[in-house]
Structures are given as structure tokens and as C-alpha cells.
Length: 384
Image (cartoon, rainbow, N blue to C red; front, side, top):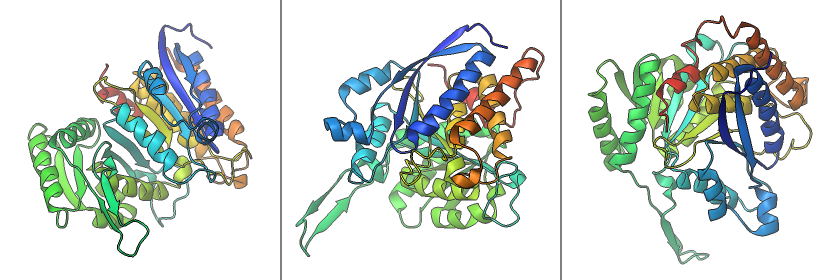
């Protein structure tokens, strides 16, 4: 059953490089099904950012691109990266530039082990692994300030600065506590206060200030090195984890391994105040070794799409995409590659069909499961 659209959203689509166009296309297949089922529409603007565009034009993220992106309600991103381009150029010139220009205050990464998905952690069950990492996304060591003198000589000296402000920490912390209120009401700060004493002291002060506004939420602290030990062994200790930019980048990749691999991991780069556009992307990168073969797992992309729909207020559609993805994922013999047994598009079609099935019960179904991250995210995202 297809419903007449009553709501419209403007999406920027950036397919990117490698397997990016493949998984992005798969996400669009699922989005088509969600639109037909839940009565909304999207106007999609495709931007050719990536390695080939850079090699042909010398352009990374331009002011024209930024103007276009500001007009959108969300950005759906595939991946960038190519062996033909020096590492760091695309990452800094596109991904980090997007986060900065769109004021994407936090990077949100779920670490959830879904039923039927193999994990390298012996004895781990889905009931024990359901946490969300809220990563401050604009500061820390990623601001890019630093210098090098005597480059290319044995006397070379490099400095790399890290910046921490109360404003950015509080903004991310406030979101973490609001999200925890929708979940199990526990927030853990992850940092390295015994070595990075100044930045760590600021983070702890912010934690104390914000936690006073949420007396129902329990708080915890863990050093980042200890986090790398506890996360694989006792993930049930964590509900919402708040951390800085660099630590968040490292910890969430570890989390992706725990939950079954990079191919099943999703992320959101969220603008919280309407000054820019939020962006949603799988975290697996461009995977040039399997690009063009149709064997990339699109689950990271479809779960990122679900996060996108939740942020747009399409909570029912978001929960349905999440549930459909999880159903199909649990039946795959392998998380990706030829061993997956199906092509990227075949997996997407299965997920889309599961979304369409929801239409049969759309008028009588109960509200979305409160345990769905998509439902939780839809409850805390500001409408701007």
C-alpha cells in the first residue's frame, strides 16, 4: 500500500567513492519503500563530492556546495577515499570541512549487537551490548591547528594543538543526558584526566554542572584506555558514553568490531541548532578493494538512513527501517563480501520489502518500540 505524501524533506545525497555509491543506492531503495509506506516524500539533490571530482576539477568542498547543503534538511553520505588521492586530502577537505561548515556538534554512533550477528567476543549477547557513543565533533585534536619547522630534516619539530571549550562540551553533554533520559539513564564520561589534566578538568566540571540538571541520571567516569578494556568485555556497563573528538573516533571503531564489524555500523553527525545540516553515513569507508563488485553490505547505510529519518521526525519510518534491517541482517551468512550470499542491491530489496510489510499494520500498530534507538533519537532531536 502506498500513501499519498503529506510531508516533504529535502535531502542532499553524496554517493562518494568506492562502495559509497553502491551502499548509498541501496539506502535510496529502502528510502523509496519508506516513503511509499509512511506517507512522506523527499526531494533529493546529488552532489559529486569525492576523489574523481577532486581529480577532475581540483575541488573539495566549495562555497557553492556549502550554500546548497544549507538549503537541505539532511545529508545522506556514502564514503570518500581513494588510493589515487593522498591520504588526508579528502578526509580533511570534505568530511571534516562538512562537519565544521554545517556546525555538526556531535557524532552519534550506536554500538548495538543485533540478533544473529556474529561477534568476535565470546559469549556476548545482544542483551548485553546496547550503548550509544556521543562524540564531541568540532574540537579536540581535530581542529587542525599546529605547525612544523625544519621539515624534512633530522631537526624537524611538529606541534599539534588540541582545543577544548566549555561551550562545545556542554552542548554535547546536554544532548547525551537528554538521550540517556530516553534510555537507561546512565551517562559515562570517557577521557584521560590523569594525563590531559586541563582538558580533563574542564570535561569533569561540565559533567558536574549538567548532571545537576538531570538528577534522575546516574553518572560514571572511565579513562579511555580502561574503556578499551571494558567495552569488549563488559559492554553492559555503558548506556550513553560522552567523549571528546579523538577518543570518540578510536573507541567507536572498537565498538564497531564488538558489534560485528564496520559494515554494520552507522553514524550521525548532528547539527543541534539549525545553523547547518546534519549528515548521516556508514562508518566503513570506501573499501576500494571490493568496489564495483556488488558485495558490500548496505546495512551500515540503511541504519544511517534510519537515524536520518529519526532526526527528521519520521519516527515510525525510522523504527521500521531499523527493524527491517535487523531482520534481514540476522539472516545473512556473513556480514559482507562474497560470503554474504547476496548482492548489495538484493539485500536492500529485502529490507525494502520488510518496510513495505509494515504498511499492512500501519493504521493499527502500536507506537514504535521504546527500545528503538530511532524512537529515542526522534524524541530528543530539536525541530529547527
